Image (tube, rainbow over all chains, first blue to last red; front, top):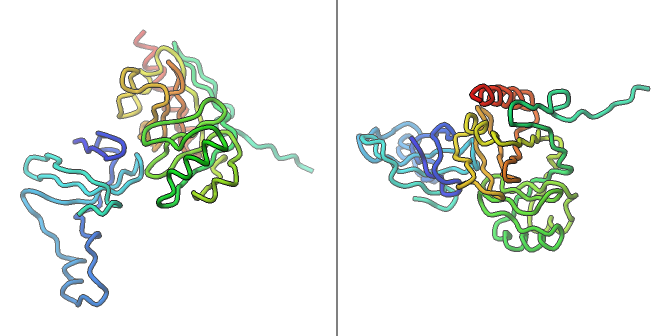
Length: 87
Length: 181
């Protein structure tokens, strides 16, 4: 599997660290309530299809990336810098 | 009174000449990380040009030349190699002295590309990786920085604590390339 880092170009998967669903970018407000925080901390989707994950280019440029990919085909659909407000 | 002497990171382990490839330690002088403040990238590049004669490098590029080089070292950062940084740079970027933090090795020779092909998961052949190009990638299992500094010469940087591992991995790869004749 290869991920095209917006800065470095197409790189081997071994350079990247997988963080998980890209939820950290949608952290609830402190007063959002128990339900929202429970959901944020513990409940995850497990789709057969498109996912949106955070990856860290640990052995590359050190950027956090938001990667959209398809778990059925392993196709990487889009890679963006998390720091540039990727949604 | 004991006299303390600084050792270079690869002291005693380099140089190595195996087959057509030579690896030797480089003394780069002062190494400074340049981390531009948000929105000050252009101003930093101008200040860098005025003070040291090279622009702030774009991703995957190195600027300057022997003795005063700036190599891109990751997202919004570059390493200034050689000169003591001009204080004017501090206005536009956070600077950190990393002179003792890196092991620097020059790998040179006809088989240098073949040696790196065994260690780095990026295409470093001359037709795509030219002089002045650089990558942040892996050297075997270590995070490192590889820059082409000549037609058949590369500058490899890894963290100083990894110097012995770097020499070991280079030696293994150099021997394997040489064995193929």
